[in-house]
Length: 489
Image: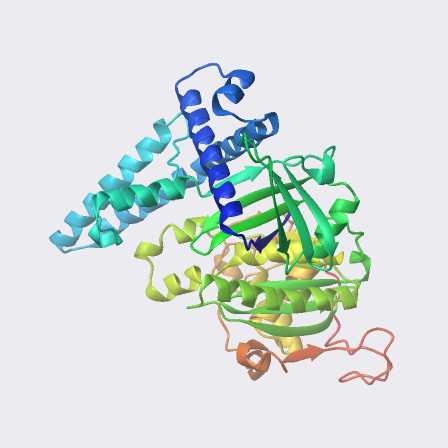
């Protein structure tokens, strides 16, 4: 799915029509939820008659409520796991704490977490608070939340509960949606005709501009795709969100020609390209400063970084390999982690980076491969960092690229005498559970490739097989044995 938004510039009369639509939709949504919780048998014709809805509007109300309840059900296991990790972290902190006052507050915290955990485990039906739970609780502390009286809070509460509505689309309807018809006027301009159900006015028409996605929406209209719309009111007025299916793009990248590994780190992203034999071709770093940035600044930084990665992948014709990570357990223990760990994990926007990369790569026809990140940094440090003068992060990106190409890189402990047992991860890489004996890194490991501040000029490039340049330590057109990388069996 692709969603694009536009700010609506309306006069007073169309604005009142949208306000009335939001009030009707919000009341119907709350009524349907109440009837479900009461266990009543819901008759669609009777509900439409009582709420004064059309058939398509009822479907939109039902679709919205189903999505809200499904979201709560899907998030519940993760919230339960998160609370269990928090309780475990508090229990461990109590054992190591010596001050009675702090122990007392930690026990109170643990009791609160256990109460929330029991409530989640015992809940059978999703619980919804229309208008947000934060605004609902603001009535108990009016002055702290900027309200003069309870009547002022109540007006804000009613406004919030009627601030949005949804119009469901279908591919067999006019312009992909019967309730809201979009017409392309040229460039980024579109005409909108929203269907109402009032006795006096049946439609409201206005014009919008889409700064992004105008071409995609015009193509969706031409292909008769379903387009759904969500209208949202904020402090500046109404906004319209148009969502439709992503256009099918042919895959242009080919794994048999090589791969591009991306290793995301705090402050920068490391990129390494390999050829079809798994040999290093080029490595570089891209600055990605997210610590202390606002949500908009973080999105802009991620988008700029991903634009360069996808552009490079399109030019090379190779797919992108990224690691599959989950920081839910680590972030659950942020309250009792060190300050450095808290800053690192809080600014580590891996999920946002991954979602944006997959979407942009799909639009560009580049395949994104997810691989197991097990021991990638250790293998990179052990096998490739010194050999090619790469930083540990660039070497880890090289391992991720080779792993997507099905080349097996084994991590062997440097202290074999204390090896306890062996294990095999999902990719088939054999590793030995033992402490790695750290050795001093050579100056090549601390080269400019590991410094994100010099990422614009920091790269390592090796000629491809077709180049006839002189390789270090060898003859023209031939690799030196010391720098050759063989696909490990």
